[in-house]
Image (cartoon, rainbow, N blue to C red):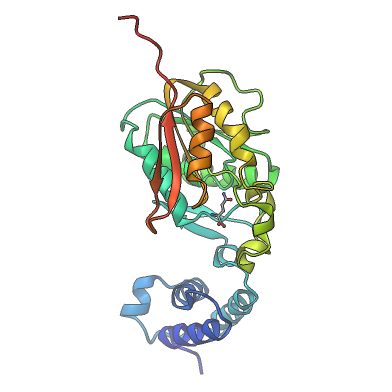
Length: 289
Ligand code: GLN
């Protein structure tokens, strides 16, 4: 007879553990919840609710896909990030908790009702830009993205979150065509994995996530070499930036931004205590006082 919610969760956990999946408990819960159309609370308050035959079949399909190392975000087509839920496809980098540090740093110095213009370079799913806009009701955003498929995902996400009216999304090559001195805040999570490292990543990333969003060239720094001077060009005087970096890229990326003329350059760690975000500002205009 039909599995109950709690049995389904335990069996799912056992299967994923046997397949060598890191974090089988959480993955099992997320897949059971989705297959059984149950909430996290249901598993606790209604643990003996039976799954329908159809729900069991859906769960079996999800588990088979996860055993082949397909990311949970691709199986479910969504991922929670910061305080929002995002649609996710294989055309975008799945939003990661590490990247919430970019949002946190950007919001720290962003007054709640400021009508700032925000630029996100390589906007992907929209995770960073839409999280910021959701928290700053007077802000407007522009997301630039090289991939048309990723832009379509960002557009859907902006619409689903009711942010389309304040979000412009453009296909483009980083800052090409953007005016000087135009933005109050620039954020980015560019590709920063050195090419030779990509093959050593987990299969979930290596085989399922877009190379365009990962590949940072021979030393991982190719994007920052373009971005540092360009971010300083498009920022308004006094404007701020926050970009994600790899855990071992602090010195190199700080140096690139200092060479580009940035002030107040510093690195912020993520919740796992790894260097994760380089932030700074463009020199304000002289007041002449
Ligand atoms: N942090 C991601 C990873 O390690 C990479 C993201 C990026 O290159 N921007 O998979």
